[in-house]
Length: 633
Figure 1 (cartoon, rainbow, N blue to C red):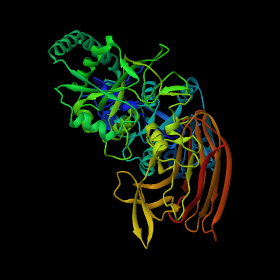
Figure 2 (tube, rainbow, N blue to C red):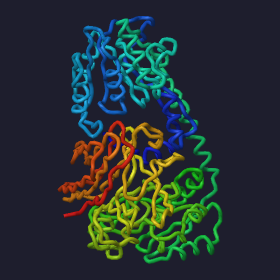
Figure 3 (tube, helix red, strand yellow):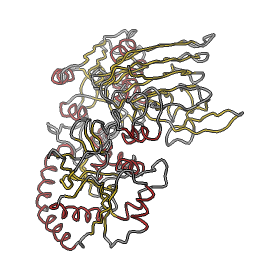
């Protein structure tokens, strides 16, 4: 199993680009449907591939089915195996199956190789597994006579496997996924492309080919082979127009009205309501104006004042973008330089011993007054990181401009760090320092200020007194290898608080349940639009290297259906480690209690995931998690 994390920086980079070039129209539409803000100028130019067009109408003899790609669910390995099982006994005498791909992932909580061995244990025909084959060896294996490659990924953009197979004259069958229809000639792909990605449709096409022992060769569209010329033409056009664009920008700058930057002195502590009143209620400004919130331990470098005016003008021109405020490079007391950035928006000398936990921020007067929510608790005081947190919550950005504009006169904290693992005195709270990120690191700082508590790093203790105490853990489900969090709605029922966990963007709840149970879902109408859904609880680490203890206590109720499995994964930079995996049969007479303890080395960005995986038919009962905690040693 692989958990994907989409970096917000990718969205921001795309939004700020002048244009976007995609190898398929599908990818552009995919991003738009998921809320990405794209530049207005968009072009589709395929990736360049080596090879030349092949004549249409050619066929080759086949008797061997090949799965080629990463051995994981997103690449369709379950669909492939289900189709093999459905083929029955009417197979060619020399029929074979081949797996070629990377096997580092997990399938149904099992290592991919173990899962394939289990699935193919009763197959009566030869099965060849080339797991982790080098690219050159994999290409040689694919070119062997008799191969029919089956590409049945759930999502694809412009798969090179398909392009290389087509140029090499290797027969294939593919699903109508992603950008694949843009790659294949529609006229010559009707016999090798499956539209609805089901076992039945794939079986129909593959069985027909095996019966006739011949498969048509794939034919790529002409624009695939014209990609090199398209790229060369784009570069010629781009550089030819570069000079005219630069000249137009210069003329626009000269016509732009000189911006006015108003300095606002802020110091700690400074009540948020007072800051807002001084800037938004009492300040008289002339448009276009910007406010510079300048802490008392900073000064503006004299030669840098024109930079502030220039960036102020740019902020006004970018009022339709998501950039709401800007900070700049800082000259530190030791004459070194720093460019403050998330997570804590601070200036520091590279160690936790000296730092200033407030930095200068500039925004347009209008933007600041519309985004600074001084009345929204818990922001009782103004500081740079709390304002950055406000912007994040409004899907806006504070960015660091690459110019040194300010000088730090003195650190506000010496001997204390500003980071959450070593907070200064006014941020100190009892308890361990390892904290989990819910959405971004500013949440960690906010939590350390307003929610002092003597709690473990991350705990999920569901009891009658606190139905939703899931500090550090997120409750959701696994969809094609991705963790998707649920949303939670409470309502009153029989004087007890019960909850409804809902899939995001789904009108129906995942399952109507009480506050203690975690339910798997199979063969039900409530699986987030799927026939099967695996609920999961996830914790992501935000700390340096630390020895930790994990305690898990849960009760299993497999009284109906054919049972379920409970497993815990530790995802780290070296791969995936399975801490435990227990399978429970259905119709148990009493609950099964498990109490587990582990010693772990948790690193920054490690992830722990508890999964409750249903068998073929189990969407009732479930798992009661009595305790799920991470402690620092």
